[in-house]
Image 1: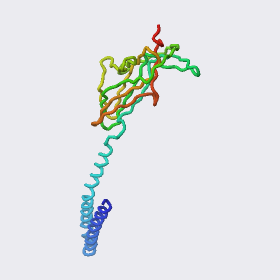
Image 2: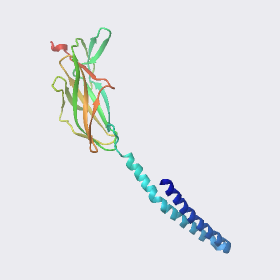
Image 3: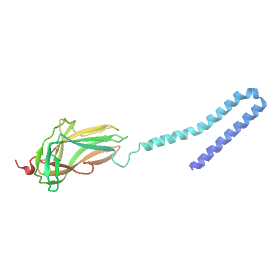
Image 4: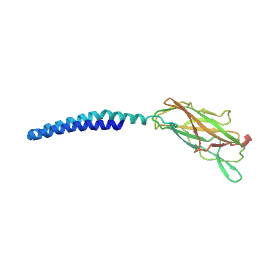
Length: 230
Protein backbone atom coordinates (compact mmCIF):
# COMPACT_ATOMS: atom_id res chain seq x y z
CA UNK A 1 0.00 0.00 0.00
CA UNK A 2 2.72 2.58 0.80
CA UNK A 3 4.37 1.95 -2.59
CA UNK A 4 1.04 2.32 -4.41
CA UNK A 5 0.39 5.61 -2.59
CA UNK A 6 3.88 6.77 -3.54
CA UNK A 7 3.30 5.96 -7.22
CA UNK A 8 -0.06 7.74 -7.07
CA UNK A 9 1.55 10.87 -5.62
CA UNK A 10 4.36 10.68 -8.19
CA UNK A 11 1.81 10.45 -11.03
CA UNK A 12 -0.12 13.39 -9.59
CA UNK A 13 3.06 15.44 -9.33
CA UNK A 14 4.16 14.32 -12.76
CA UNK A 15 0.79 15.33 -14.23
CA UNK A 16 0.77 18.67 -12.47
CA UNK A 17 4.39 19.40 -13.24
CA UNK A 18 4.02 18.32 -16.90
CA UNK A 19 0.98 20.49 -17.46
CA UNK A 20 2.67 23.47 -15.85
CA UNK A 21 5.80 22.95 -17.97
CA UNK A 22 3.74 22.80 -21.20
CA UNK A 23 1.89 26.02 -20.36
CA UNK A 24 5.14 27.80 -19.46
CA UNK A 25 6.82 26.68 -22.68
CA UNK A 26 3.93 27.92 -24.81
CA UNK A 27 3.93 31.28 -23.02
CA UNK A 28 7.66 31.74 -23.56
CA UNK A 29 7.29 31.04 -27.26
CA UNK A 30 4.29 33.39 -27.62
CA UNK A 31 5.52 36.35 -25.56
CA UNK A 32 9.04 35.86 -24.19
CA UNK A 33 9.34 39.36 -22.79
CA UNK A 34 6.29 39.08 -20.47
CA UNK A 35 6.25 35.39 -19.68
CA UNK A 36 9.14 35.05 -17.20
CA UNK A 37 7.38 36.53 -14.17
CA UNK A 38 4.17 34.70 -15.01
CA UNK A 39 6.06 31.40 -15.44
CA UNK A 40 7.65 31.77 -12.03
CA UNK A 41 4.21 32.23 -10.51
CA UNK A 42 2.86 29.11 -12.24
CA UNK A 43 5.80 27.00 -11.02
CA UNK A 44 5.43 28.35 -7.49
CA UNK A 45 1.71 27.47 -7.49
CA UNK A 46 2.46 23.94 -8.75
CA UNK A 47 5.12 23.45 -6.06
CA UNK A 48 2.74 24.68 -3.35
CA UNK A 49 0.08 22.23 -4.54
CA UNK A 50 2.56 19.34 -4.36
CA UNK A 51 3.82 20.34 -0.92
CA UNK A 52 0.22 20.72 0.23
CA UNK A 53 -0.36 17.08 -0.67
CA UNK A 54 2.85 15.91 1.06
CA UNK A 55 2.77 17.99 4.27
CA UNK A 56 -0.17 16.24 6.05
CA UNK A 57 1.40 12.81 5.59
CA UNK A 58 4.84 14.01 6.75
CA UNK A 59 3.25 15.56 9.83
CA UNK A 60 1.40 12.32 10.62
CA UNK A 61 4.62 10.32 10.24
CA UNK A 62 6.49 12.70 12.58
CA UNK A 63 3.72 12.45 15.19
CA UNK A 64 3.73 8.65 14.93
CA UNK A 65 7.51 8.56 15.49
CA UNK A 66 7.15 10.79 18.54
CA UNK A 67 4.36 8.63 19.99
CA UNK A 68 6.43 5.48 19.44
CA UNK A 69 9.43 7.05 21.21
CA UNK A 70 7.26 7.80 24.25
CA UNK A 71 5.82 4.29 24.58
CA UNK A 72 6.93 2.64 27.88
CA UNK A 73 9.33 -0.28 27.55
CA UNK A 74 8.82 -3.73 29.05
CA UNK A 75 11.76 -3.34 31.47
CA UNK A 76 11.96 -1.42 34.72
CA UNK A 77 11.52 2.35 34.12
CA UNK A 78 14.37 3.23 36.47
CA UNK A 79 18.07 2.74 37.09
CA UNK A 80 19.56 2.03 40.52
CA UNK A 81 23.08 2.65 41.80
CA UNK A 82 24.31 1.68 45.28
CA UNK A 83 27.24 2.68 47.47
CA UNK A 84 28.25 1.54 50.97
CA UNK A 85 29.25 4.51 53.13
CA UNK A 86 30.02 5.39 56.74
CA UNK A 87 31.41 1.94 57.30
CA UNK A 88 33.64 0.19 59.75
CA UNK A 89 34.71 -3.35 58.90
CA UNK A 90 34.64 -6.74 60.57
CA UNK A 91 37.73 -8.64 59.41
CA UNK A 92 36.89 -12.33 59.03
CA UNK A 93 39.33 -15.23 58.65
CA UNK A 94 37.57 -17.70 56.32
CA UNK A 95 40.45 -20.18 56.33
CA UNK A 96 41.48 -19.83 52.70
CA UNK A 97 41.28 -16.03 52.75
CA UNK A 98 40.72 -13.00 54.97
CA UNK A 99 37.90 -10.64 54.01
CA UNK A 100 36.60 -7.29 55.26
CA UNK A 101 32.79 -7.17 55.68
CA UNK A 102 30.98 -3.86 56.35
CA UNK A 103 30.08 -3.79 60.04
CA UNK A 104 26.57 -3.09 61.29
CA UNK A 105 25.94 0.63 61.52
CA UNK A 106 27.15 1.39 57.99
CA UNK A 107 25.11 3.43 55.53
CA UNK A 108 23.93 2.07 52.20
CA UNK A 109 23.30 4.88 49.71
CA UNK A 110 20.76 4.08 46.98
CA UNK A 111 20.39 6.45 44.02
CA UNK A 112 17.25 5.85 41.95
CA UNK A 113 16.93 7.58 38.57
CA UNK A 114 13.84 7.50 36.35
CA UNK A 115 14.78 6.56 32.80
CA UNK A 116 11.47 8.05 31.52
CA UNK A 117 9.79 9.66 29.88
CA UNK A 118 6.84 8.67 32.15
CA UNK A 119 7.35 9.69 35.77
CA UNK A 120 7.89 6.90 38.31
CA UNK A 121 6.36 6.88 41.80
CA UNK A 122 8.43 4.95 44.33
CA UNK A 123 5.92 3.29 46.64
CA UNK A 124 8.01 1.27 49.08
CA UNK A 125 11.29 -0.42 49.97
CA UNK A 126 11.77 -3.85 51.56
CA UNK A 127 14.76 -5.89 52.74
CA UNK A 128 15.13 -9.65 52.19
CA UNK A 129 17.56 -11.75 54.24
CA UNK A 130 19.11 -14.50 52.10
CA UNK A 131 21.26 -16.20 54.77
CA UNK A 132 22.80 -15.76 58.23
CA UNK A 133 25.90 -17.43 59.69
CA UNK A 134 28.21 -17.14 62.69
CA UNK A 135 31.01 -14.70 61.89
CA UNK A 136 33.66 -14.13 64.62
CA UNK A 137 36.17 -11.47 63.62
CA UNK A 138 37.95 -8.24 64.50
CA UNK A 139 36.40 -4.78 64.18
CA UNK A 140 38.36 -2.23 62.13
CA UNK A 141 37.13 1.37 62.28
CA UNK A 142 36.96 3.84 59.41
CA UNK A 143 35.78 7.45 59.04
CA UNK A 144 32.08 8.15 58.52
CA UNK A 145 30.20 10.58 56.24
CA UNK A 146 26.99 12.58 56.51
CA UNK A 147 23.91 10.92 54.86
CA UNK A 148 21.26 12.56 52.65
CA UNK A 149 17.76 10.99 53.01
CA UNK A 150 17.88 8.56 55.89
CA UNK A 151 16.33 5.15 56.47
CA UNK A 152 17.14 2.28 58.79
CA UNK A 153 17.30 -1.36 57.69
CA UNK A 154 16.52 -3.70 60.61
CA UNK A 155 17.80 -7.09 59.46
CA UNK A 156 16.95 -8.83 62.74
CA UNK A 157 13.22 -8.09 62.45
CA UNK A 158 10.96 -10.83 61.09
CA UNK A 159 10.36 -9.88 58.35
CA UNK A 160 13.22 -7.37 57.95
CA UNK A 161 12.09 -3.74 58.15
CA UNK A 162 13.07 -0.58 56.31
CA UNK A 163 12.10 2.32 58.56
CA UNK A 164 12.15 6.00 57.64
CA UNK A 165 14.20 8.34 59.82
CA UNK A 166 13.90 12.11 60.29
CA UNK A 167 10.36 12.22 58.86
CA UNK A 168 11.38 11.01 55.40
CA UNK A 169 9.18 8.27 53.93
CA UNK A 170 7.67 6.93 50.71
CA UNK A 171 6.19 7.66 48.22
CA UNK A 172 8.60 9.83 46.22
CA UNK A 173 7.94 11.05 42.69
CA UNK A 174 10.92 11.31 40.34
CA UNK A 175 10.55 12.70 36.81
CA UNK A 176 12.68 11.65 33.85
CA UNK A 177 16.43 12.14 34.50
CA UNK A 178 15.76 13.16 38.12
CA UNK A 179 17.20 11.18 41.03
CA UNK A 180 16.31 10.36 44.61
CA UNK A 181 19.17 9.61 47.04
CA UNK A 182 18.46 7.23 49.93
CA UNK A 183 20.90 6.50 52.75
CA UNK A 184 20.13 3.30 54.63
CA UNK A 185 21.57 2.63 58.08
CA UNK A 186 21.95 -1.14 58.21
CA UNK A 187 21.87 -2.97 61.55
CA UNK A 188 22.10 -6.54 62.80
CA UNK A 189 23.27 -8.08 66.07
CA UNK A 190 23.35 -11.69 64.90
CA UNK A 191 25.94 -13.29 62.63
CA UNK A 192 26.81 -12.65 59.00
CA UNK A 193 23.76 -11.66 56.94
CA UNK A 194 23.36 -11.82 53.17
CA UNK A 195 20.51 -9.66 52.02
CA UNK A 196 19.04 -7.61 49.18
CA UNK A 197 16.56 -4.77 48.77
CA UNK A 198 13.37 -4.66 46.71
CA UNK A 199 12.21 -1.26 45.47
CA UNK A 200 8.48 -1.05 44.67
CA UNK A 201 7.32 1.43 42.03
CA UNK A 202 4.46 2.50 39.79
CA UNK A 203 4.73 4.29 36.45
CA UNK A 204 2.23 5.06 33.67
CA UNK A 205 -0.30 2.58 35.00
CA UNK A 206 2.28 -0.17 35.60
CA UNK A 207 3.45 -1.64 38.91
CA UNK A 208 6.68 -3.47 39.56
CA UNK A 209 9.65 -4.05 41.82
CA UNK A 210 13.37 -3.73 41.23
CA UNK A 211 16.00 -5.76 43.06
CA UNK A 212 18.85 -3.71 44.53
CA UNK A 213 22.16 -5.45 45.19
CA UNK A 214 25.90 -5.10 44.56
CA UNK A 215 26.19 -5.79 40.83
CA UNK A 216 24.29 -9.07 41.06
CA UNK A 217 25.68 -10.09 44.46
CA UNK A 218 23.83 -9.90 47.77
CA UNK A 219 24.86 -7.35 50.38
CA UNK A 220 26.75 -8.81 53.33
CA UNK A 221 26.60 -7.32 56.83
CA UNK A 222 28.30 -8.74 59.92
CA UNK A 223 27.28 -8.09 63.51
CA UNK A 224 29.75 -5.96 65.45
CA UNK A 225 29.55 -8.48 68.29
CA UNK A 226 29.32 -11.80 66.41
CA UNK A 227 26.97 -14.33 67.96
CA UNK A 228 25.35 -11.66 70.14
CA UNK A 229 28.00 -12.05 72.92
CA UNK A 230 29.48 -9.13 74.85
